Amino acid sequence: MPYARYLLTLLLSLVLVPLLAQEPSQPVRLELPFDPIETEAEVIALPDSSLLVYQKTSNAWGTRATFRFTKYNSQLEEVWSDTASLAPDSNFLRYYSEQPYTYLVFDANDLQDYTFVRLHDKNGSIWHKKFEIDPIEGVYEYQVLQGNYFIIGQNRKTQKPLLLHLNPATGNIQLLPSVYGDESTFSDLLADPAQNRVDAVITESNGRVSRLQVKSFAPDGKLLKNYFILQKEDKSLLNAEITPGDSTRKMLIGTYGTRDLRYNQGFFTAPLAANIVANAEFYNMLQLKNFLKYMKPRREERTRRREASRLKTGRSPSYHYRLLLHDLIVTPTGYVLAAEAYYPQYSSNSRNIGAGRTITIGRQEEGYKRTHAVVLGFDRNGVLLWDNTFPLVGVTSYELTHTVEVQYLPDGRVVMAYPEDDKIIFHLMDEDRYNDQETELTLLTYTEDDKIQDTDQPGIIRWYGNNMAAFGFQRIKSKSGNSREVFYVNKISF
Image (tube, rainbow, N blue to C red; front, side):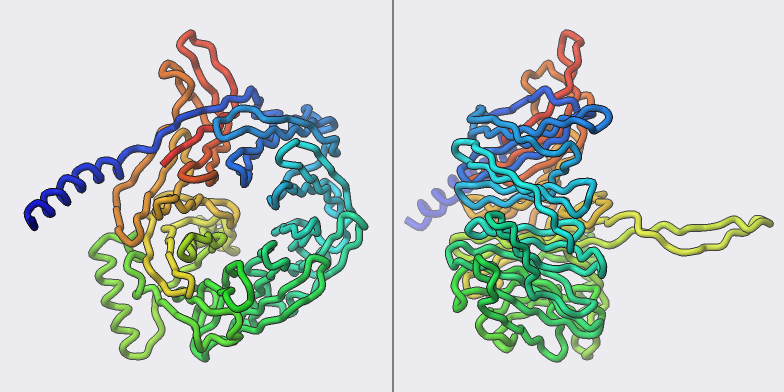
């Protein structure tokens, strides 16, 4: 009997390994005849497994523009399409979905003017209105609760972040109590329809220590509750994402630092109701099984040995990581948090002063280079279950924005992916089982005879189930020799 059980296990493993190693499929592709010179386009995943494609087509002078919104079902078949009469200088910024609506915000050349669009996901009916929001320039975050807009923007005068409430029915705009100090900023903004509240997570700092504060607001902007999350003496709470749920179950999951508040020393989880971190869990980088796997094995070994020695003697870690957090993903059993490790790239400004000599005037940031992305899985109580790492080779962004997409699959695995020309570079993670094999997927065209000559503005978003959507502009050459410019959407199934 034991032999039979062993044989059955062996046979199952031989069947499952090839299945797990299978390349993702691309069951359907959509091509739209968009001219990349005249057209701006965005793809948005809707909660009902459909896609919304936004298209702005302008003339060469920017004096006329058409704004079209088209919904496609899960098979990329058109469901409805309609246009909105927006000002030609309107530019898409952000969106938020709260069934049955999708809300979009646009700015304009006049930085005080913002246009809000509301689309009915099922029938495509469109409402839009322009508001003059004098206090801010730029919208960084945007959430909607019961038709009320919560907006994080930058103060026009002080350049500090601020939180606004806008009632689109009355046009009333109110400034909500939020950040105070020069070093304070927003860490997260979450609309929680089930609890009928919006939670704003604020990082407060005086340059030496940092703590977190959570403010909860009603749909009308009324302050419901204020939580001060006090840190331990030797740990400063830097940034955090907040979970949905009632006050007794809400948690903060984020990063902490020690002496230098620019760098992260590890991750923490803390129940919101406690107001202090006495009940928090802290995980330094050395406690994570795979965080350092982006290094060569010998370098990882040396790093772990050196840092363990420093901790034993009471010294602070010498590793320095800047982490850009992703939105928290809620799973059937807990939470998944992803983060990208990055560092600024600088260029020196030099001046020739003659005699073959130059002087360096200063350094200027040129972008942000990634080293790796990390994913951590937690249970409902904030206990770390596993971690995994995705090395990012040659991935750079000029602005500090997310460069990888993260999706939790129905079978419990996590996929991280980013576009690179006509390929998708991805990593499938099965909890803490690390795999250093780099995997890539070449985007398929309509026929094998089609050749991709150029890909521009590629992107990828999580969609539904085990599907993602890759999109961008391509120039395709057919077998007959004719070329066509298209905006493509490829469904990718893992």
